[in-house]
Length: 402
Image (tube, rainbow, N blue to C red; front, side, top):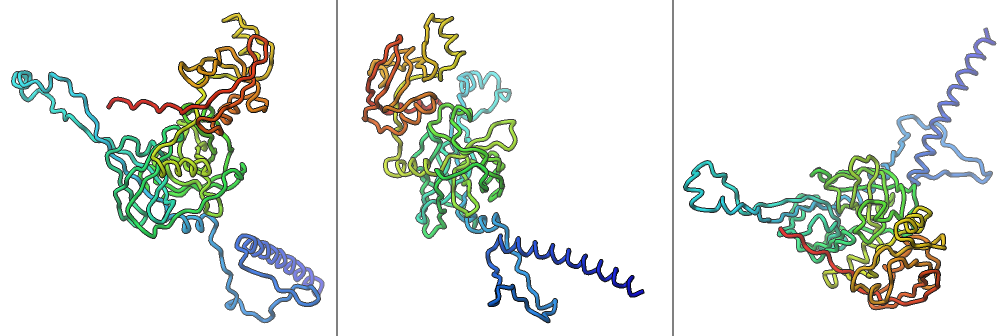
């Protein structure tokens, strides 16, 4: 009988030990997550315990998860942006003709000469005196911009400047003591880091989604917006229409990017503008209302066996190098044109640095100020040519007729 009781006791203590081990792991996890608990040790180095403590006297502090902390920290800085624009409906002339209206009477449709287009997006406060950063496409061409804070209060917004090439805009509202966000260094961002998006997708204010940074340095061509002059952060945090202009945050609640684009029919693929680049653009918009982007004036393609074969078969051009960037076309009266660059030239060096990709040319031009000389090493008809190009200002796109 004693042997049987001993076996039962041993099983019970083993089960209890496993339960306690599980509890210890859980508490250890809480300790690692919150950093708010400490372990006291006596002089022998053995962890001390508190004896004779009743269950009712033990209080376990359950920390909030990091997402809740970030939302509490940043949520008040995220705003909803409503933009409206009055456009002409281009009513056919016959509908305004008095004779037609008299003849057809009530059968004539009553079409207004103007209608209002409305857009919805997100933004976030970058200074306590009412400066707000968002996407350019949220407010482009708007007659009126209304900013709604998390507390429900609304303010008329003044667009201080927009830049279509980076899809960024700055809005100013008349307010004081607003909660401004903190910025991270997006150059230090690594794939796999946590990412939190806050915005107003589909009009649902202060919606929070989470994920990770899926990739950094995505080119505009890869994202499918070849007209943009910026690289992107890729994230799997859910981004939907209305999220545009809202912040992408790290686990510390610092802004790492501005949510800006999604790929239709794709899931778990969204893109954000790195905050370092966004801040540089915003400073220029605040200072002068526009941004002067550097401009070379070429269309280009990275060399590959397929490109070389096409050149040989289509225009009988023999290319004897394997690496470089081919100039496919030169924009008339551009800096490249004025410097004598030609279709068929192959860029192999910029400022004594070897060039193999189109993105490297774009980055080199973007880092060169307007009016500065950019040294190029080319191959033309099998000969090495060194030249310099004075970088110009990228022409602004023409406004479409409305």
